[in-house]
Length: 282
Image 1 (cartoon, rainbow, N blue to C red):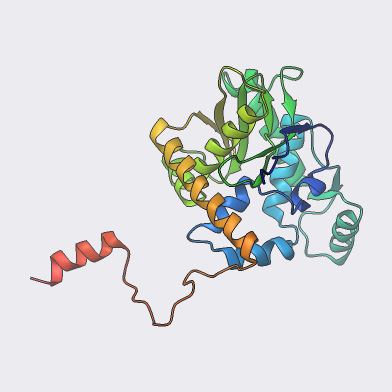
Image 2 (cartoon, one colour; image 1 turned 180 degrees about the vertical axis):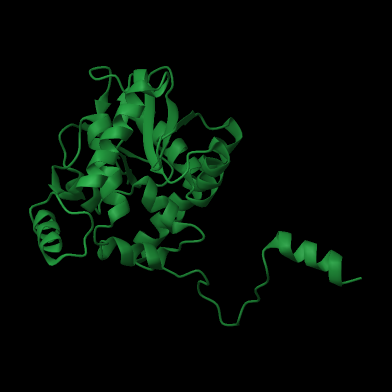
């Protein structure tokens, strides 16, 4: 019997909460969480037990609102910090109302960050209002595994996916490490595949990173990933999709070790082993 895959779908106006709560499809962050240093067991627990809001996420959401024109409603709390009880009460009430609470100083910071984006010779034109679509939800079915997938580009400008990230330091070397540590090369490939699968880029999609420092003067680095790293990211996605399909099919979500009967060995990272072996094992 042949299974008919669900057709690609583009959804406008879907809330971020509904998008992230969807358990019938998997996102880029989900695929990344399945692979080392994550594992299926941790992924499933985190999906079933969503994390509470964190200040770093609040700042990012607020910055997205002013740069993209889409995002949650803000609640500016006129206190220097969260130590006073009144400030904490206003913060908690904002969360209950579905708003993002920001201290006055943090709100001023994200306004300055958005202004820096508008002044930037590359990022500014990329985010010109009216030239793209923010936070559009895209769904498609992976043909190899039958897994339903989803992406939500920050900004889709024609065939260009623009991904806006705030980071403590937007220096290129720092960004390079962040791509490795957070597997952003997987996100790059996955978003390109999703946009193309949905028919939104008939001639092929591009993915552009816009990183902005959260430290004044809020410097910006715009980059495209190398082809080789994108290929690696796509290969990681393919492995994660197979792993996810197997976990769902068997309702079995293993940890890092998997099903073993003997205690495995472990050692230092390869580079450290080589370095110390050269120094000490003579």
